[in-house]
Image (cartoon, rainbow, N blue to C red; front, side, top):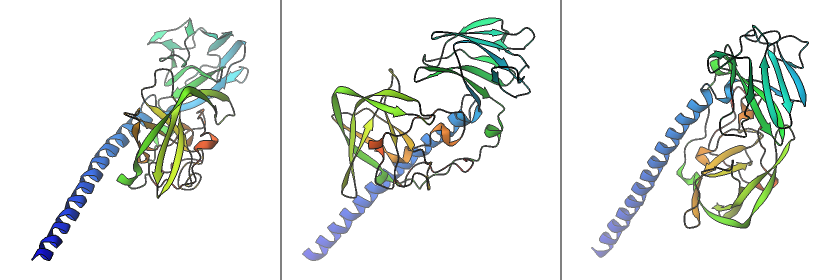
Length: 300
């Protein structure tokens, strides 16, 4: 009888463990599916990376812009005037002057001239020409004109995203090791431009008995989470060759959750006009992370 009761107790304990695991998996599945919905909505929206259609780096002085080949910056698009206007670069300041009759607008009104705030600020100044939206970006101290087309074929022909199956074991607990003082990590982007990013510390986690380490950075001065750029054994095979990104909550009592189910492709996986940062050497894992977003079917 005692043996039967012990056996029943063991089965009950196993059932409780299984139920707890099922709840954990269901909770993780709900969280990840919600995140995926928001991810697709952002990617396919008016300001999503599927809309990018041009990127031009500015030189000091005047930079003429338009559809005609005589311009310094040429965008062959039917919604852009042959000579749309010019960007005047003075130090770190950019002023755009529209050509008469070009149809360039700002906030829905015809434009003559305007000082453009870059995306180094939270909200860059956006100027329009039909479905085109252009604004100034700053990368590693260089200024450029980024152009969006809200009617872009990439957006209209979006093929959807593919993922590894959601698995609760890929939502791993990580120990946060702060850097005192904070370090600056040299990050190279896909264009070869370099910039230093602020790193408050590293995340250390264990998988299959092996300890791994990822340096975290802050994605801007007002960052509200940790930003991880990483590559792994799936990079260039099932996943994008330039690595993937994850946003991780700030640590509480030195611990946080590193959820690889929410690993996602950088913008360069979808568009040639993005300026994606690449994972630093120390964030290239000797591990196959079979979780998160796979390679985009429409990528080159």
